[in-house]
Structures are given as structure tokens and as C-alpha cells.
Length: 270
Ligand SMILES: NC(=O)c1ccc[n+]([C@@H]2O[C@H](COP(=O)([O-])OP(=O)(O)OC[C@H]3O[C@@H](n4cnc5c(N)ncnc54)[C@H](O)[C@@H]3O)[C@@H](O)[C@H]2O)c1
Ligand SMILES: CCCCC/C=C\C=C\[C@H](O)C/C=C\C/C=C\CCCC(=O)O
Image (cartoon, rainbow, N blue to C red; front, side):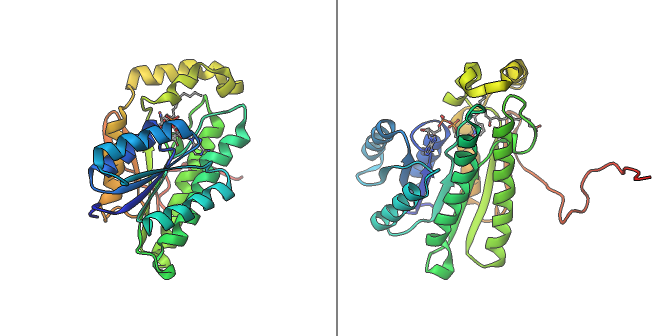
């Protein structure tokens, strides 16, 4: 996929991984609509980007992805301003095990909402030009992350939802590829929450396990994860894929198909 003048939308765009996705998209020629709840950081980033890539290449919109009204409203404004959506990245996410309903509303609810709303503009049956949606999960979407069971549940949800929607999109000829990205620990502000009981809630005693994992395996830099993100956006053979990125490199996950070949151990019912 040639990204020149394509219109991309990134949620949670003001910092961390979202910012790195915005930057790699713009370096490759896209115009980008940034969505975030952090208005001051978002506006500042937009100004920096327009200085670097030319006027009106980036625009910032304040919205909370867990609010239908906010999210619907900004996507409408984005399409009015940029004409269409070619690339949607549902990246916004938090870790908060204490206020776990909020974590579900943002991490899973925001991805579901962002996918459904973007498809309305992107799918060919509605006059859209197709394109690609990349949802951001985590390796915690593939296995347990003991300090954060609710976070783990939301990320498993994002993986399952994205895979199912990719099948829907193919069978319905939406012309939209849907992929999911599963990064290992990345050096962003999220990592500092490990020392916050307000965020780890009942599971702060699991902190040492997380520290050991990070020390033994290491943490990724944002720009490495951005390169993996770009593969899912640009490579048109990536359609319904889950891409894992960890310190050993990037790899497409192979899932068992149709309930067959699931690694399993028979159990006697006698
Ligand atoms: N950092 C990691 O180790 C890591 C690893 C795997 C996956 N992830 C995932 O990557 C995504 C980005 O994480 P990050 O590490 O860059 O975090 P971050 O905290 O650095 O950035 C997250 C951004 O999302 C915004 N945001 C939060 N709630 C929002 C909401 N309701 N609506 C709109 N914007 C909102 C924040 O203001 C912030 O700018 C998350 O989904 C996270 O789960 C992170
Ligand atoms: C509450 C404090 C959390 C501190 C860490 C911050 C952010 C990390 C988020 C990542 O999404 C976690 C990424 C990878 C580790 C998760 C699970 C490991 C097990 C995976 C497996 O079994 O394959």
C-alpha cells in the first residue's frame, strides 16, 4: 500500500506508541488525524508535525474513545476535513486494575467502537475506498500478564475481536484489511505505572514477576514497534494477521483453524 497522501487516524496519538505510529505514517507520506484525551500534548505534537511535514498534514482532535458521542463526532469532523479515512489505528489504552470497568471501556470498548465507526466510512459498500485497520493489543493478548488480569482480558478481547472482524470484512467484501499488533513491554509512560498501587490494585504483589520479565527479556523502543506497525499497514498480504513484536524480533502468530489442531491433552470423562 502506497501511503502517499493517504488519510490515517490514530487514537492515543499524543505520546508513546501512538506518537511513534503517527510519525512513521507521516514519514511515509500520509496525512494524519490525531485523537487523544490529552489536549495540550496533542496540540503541541500537531504543531511540531506540521512544521516538519508541511502545513495541514496533521490535525489534532480531543476525544475519549470510550465515549460514543465524542468518537463519532470527531470521525465525522475528520472526514469533513480530510475527505476520507484510509488507515485507522485503534491504539488508545490504559492499565488500571482498580477502576477495571474503565479499563474495559477504553481498551476493548474503544477498539470495538473505533473499528465499527471507521468501517462506516471505509467499507466499499458505503462508497468508501477500503484500506486497513490496525488494532493495538499486546503480548498480554496472547498469554497471562499476572499484575493486570483485566488488562490481559481486554487485550485477549482485542485479538479475538480483530480476528473475527477480519473474517467478516473478507466475507462481506468491505475492502478493508484488519490486523492486530501484539507488542512486548515498550519504553513508554505506561511502564511507570508498575509502582502505582492506584493502577495495579489488588495485584501489586505481582510486581516482582513483571520486573523480572522486563529485566530478563528487555523492553522495546517505540520506533521498533512502529516498524512492525508499518508492515501491517503497507503489506497487502497482511489481512487478518496478529503480529507479535518482542526483543527477539517480529513474527506472525499461527492460530489453530476452525477448532482443529489446537494443542491439547485428552481428558477422560469416565
Ligand atoms: N507500553 C507498553 O509496554 C505496551 C506494550 C504492549 C501494548 N501496549 C499498548 O499500546 C497502546 C499505547 O500504549 P502506550 O504505552 O503508548 O501508552 P501511553 O500512556 O504512553 O500513551 C497512551 C495515550 O493514549 C491516550 N489515551 C488514554 N485514554 C484515552 C481515551 N480514553 N481516549 C483517547 N485517548 C486516550 C493517553 O492520553 C496517551 O496519550 C495501549 O493500547 C497499550 O495497551 C503498550
Ligand atoms: C500496572 C503496571 C503495568 C506495568 C507494565 C506496563 C505496561 C505493559 C504493557 C504491555 O502490554 C505488557 C506486554 C507484555 C507482557 C504481557 C504478558 C506476558 C505473557 C505473554 C505470553 O505468555 O506469551
